Length: 314
Image (cartoon, rainbow, N blue to C red):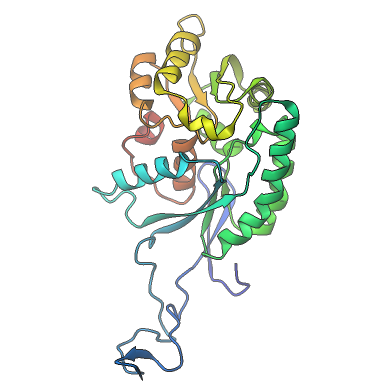
């Protein structure tokens, strides 16, 4: 962010934090070269008001809000799901002018089948995150979304927050992170007893359970799909997710208030509304919830279709 960027500030309704949104339309945008618009090979200084030092034009696509999305290079699901929600909610104007600018975090070693593999993946992701933020800031985003479940590679809430603190400070922007969005969603739903569905192996699943317990939730049951390669998470079939939710997690005996799904490469959008209907509990799925949190914190309050009860009703 440039030091002279104009800012508007408001209090996030979910976080209670001060959120500063940079004005990305500060004049003159677009900045036209000294010659003016090139017409038939020659500069034309009288081409209307474009380039006027007294006005700025908005981004023609992301004119309402420009979100920066940071996600692992191995993730093939999250961007698709977020754009699906944005595009499908255009008709009534709820998300008109909302756009995503995605930046990948290099994760060259996707094997997480062993504790050593998880440690290597953790180092590559955290080492690459600051560089990815530098790249993302080149597009002048107004708010950032972290498309990653840090509890997969970090053990406990303190480690998660410690890892994000310097990144948030460096970016000088507000973030939607899972460790903030998930409890905001559960508070909104009035949920305390939860079941966890993750794509993680034993270590990652235990770390996810620990984070939610430290956030104050009773993790009644959990299912980890034990993917040893993070590229493969996108290939977990919907029937397996449904089996985990309907037959293991959201049983009558567990008396869950919500099912919580971690892992941004594990798509739930195709089945979330079916699951909520059959299980009769809300499904707090990471991808739609991160978008919900980012939107609500930025003042977009309309009901959204296709992402489950939370997005529709709150």
